Amino acid sequence: MWSLAWPWALLALPLPLIMRYLLPEARGMSEAGLRVPSIESFRTLMDRSGAEQLLNWRFWVAALAWILLVLAAARPERIGDELDVPVAGRNLMLAVDLSGSMDQKDFELGGLRVDRLTATKAVASDFIERREGDRIGLILFGERAYLQVPLTLDRETVNVLLLEAFIGLAGEKTAIGDAITLAVRRVHEQKVNVGEQVLVLLTDGANTAGEVDPIKAAELAQQVGLRIYTIGIGAEQLEVASLIGGRRRINPSADLDEDTLTKIAGLTGGRYFRATDTASLQDIYKLVDELEPVEEPESGFRPVKSYYFVPLGVAVALVALLSLTSLLKRFALSRAREVQTRAG
Image (cartoon, rainbow, N blue to C red; front, side, top):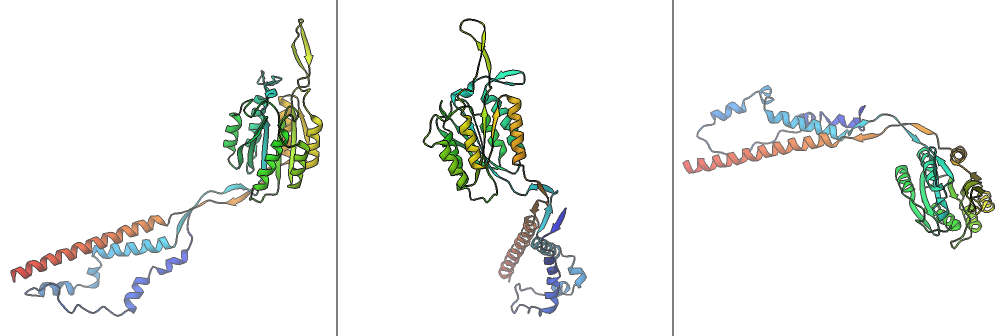
C-alpha cells in the first residue's frame, strides 16, 4: 500500500501560479542583447497569446519538475504487509560441555548409537530454532570456557557454530564454575534491558578444572538475576564387552556430580534435569520452553520504506536539462551577436 508521510506538503503545488499573479512583472532589459535591422519578426513572438506559450516544452518540463519536487517533499512511502514481532525477549545463554567424556556413545539418534555431543547438538539445535525473539549466546567449555557466540538474535549463526563444535576443543577436563562465571559476566555487560536472564548448562561430569568454584559462581549468578537450568547428560547403564568374555553392565555417568548441579539450579531459581537418553533430553528442552516461554508476538507492525528519492532524482534531472538548454541558448545568442557585430 502506498501513502504520503507528509500529505500537507501538496498544498505547495499552486505556489508558482500564486506567485505569478501576486508579484510584479519583471522589468524589460535596458539594453538589447542582439542588434537587428528590424524587430518585426520578434514582435510576432512577443505578441503570442498565453495559450500558445503553454505549447513551449520548457514550460511543461519546469511544471513537471515542480510537481515532482513537491511530491518528494510529501515523502511517498510503501507500507508492507503486517508482521508479527515479539514484544520482548530474553538473554538466554547455552553452555555446552566439550570435555573428553562427551565422546561416550551411550545415546541413540535415528536408530544409530551416537556420542553425547552429537545427541546434544541435534536436540539443542531444535531448541534454538524455537527461541524466536530471544537473544541467544553460546558458551563452549571443557578445561577452559569460551564465549563462542555473544548474545544475538541471529539464531542461524548460533546453530552453525554449535554444530561445528567438537570434543576436546576447549580441553579434556570440565570447568563448570568458569562457564557460569563467563555467562554472568556477559549477561551483566549487556546494556539491553530485558526482563529475563537465563542460562541452560549441559554437562556430563563434575567440576575438575577452572579457577571458580561452581557454587560460588552460582551465587554470583543469583546476584545479577541469572536463572540457571542445569542438565546432567549420560545413560545410567551401558553394556560393554568384558575382558574375560561376554558382556557386563557399567554406569557411564558415575562421574556426574548431580548434587552440585542441583545446588546451582536451586540457588538461582532454576531446576536440575537428568537426561539419560535422546528422548529425555528432548523432553527436558521442551520443558525449558514451557518454563521460559517465548513471548507472544505482537501484531500490527508494518515495515515502511520511503521512496522520496525517486521523484527528487527525476526533478533534479529535469532541472539540469532546463539549465543545459538555457546555457546552449545563451551560447547560440552570443555566437549570433558576434556574427552580427562582424557583419555590421
